[in-house]
Image (cartoon, rainbow, N blue to C red; front, side):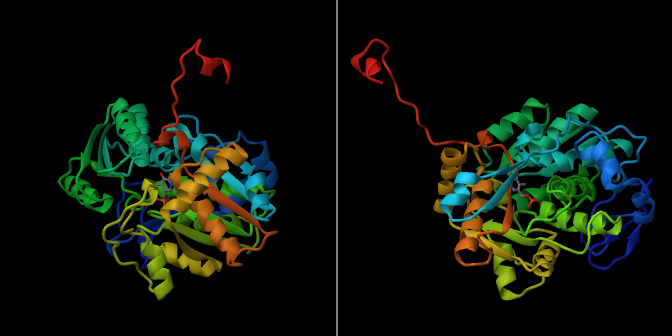
Length: 400
Ligand SMILES: *Cc1c(COP(=O)(O)O)cnc(C)c1O
């Protein structure tokens, strides 16, 4: 095993590897630490290039012991695609999207949950649960089904119906509740305390982060072992942003990159922007956002247990936190679909809207490489009704 121990992200207190964990005694996320001297012996650019692409090629820096078979649905390496027309209309050159919608269950929640469920299975856990705005529930349910575990999922109202149905299709017990995601989370936490299931809430168990951090490894290798100038990330719980920031340090520790880092931009919707508010106030922790509302349901997260880790990464990187308006989110989705043929999810639309604001205000240069994250397949969300009836044989039909 390459894991040496886990560490409280606030106090640095150590915890042993090889057993299930939730939050630290201080109530903060635990971070997995690795033996980088050992990992660097086998992790070279050349050896990595020769491995089968996908999440599991980074085994030396993943928590699952090498001899253990992961609970997998075939997680691919996701493509990085240029948005040429969108970029040129904005007068920019190097606009890229990492399209995470290609993963099993149609979102990058699969990265975290393939890891968390693989670890849970290894620990003999039989029942898992989490609160979700939709995508995490579907991924939990799919991997739990594959591992032969029971899954329990509680969603806030306004969770996209397709996610609720998909979650149920995998045999999970799923409910839509009358509150926000953190309120659903309380119910999950209470059930876990009573021993009814294991709490798989993001950052409240340490391994989803380890799955999501692979985005950081992957993008650096895909860009020729270079970091982009700027990364734009749709920030809810912030797991991916925190994970990538950790991944860059780990790549440096094993000698695969130097000290260079991208500027990290945390994008939130104006209707739920606790990180933006905390960033602007100079706070270390973020206050809960009351009355959260946005079409970008994946980032409708009023309070995040990793708030200080998001804020720290954004500040250290020289990036910032940006809030975007609903109409700009919808416009961005529409524009990219028409101009570049890619159907972003609303959270991906938020990210593009954030990049447009950053470009306009000069935070990113027109020739800088900006990497946007699209974290789910656009087909998973309701689209405007564009159906028009046609009577075959009518005059209208022959005049199409
Ligand atoms: C969960 C989710 C996010 C937010 O991810 P975090 O890493 O938890 O901040 C963004 N977009 C989509 C589509 C999601 O499902």
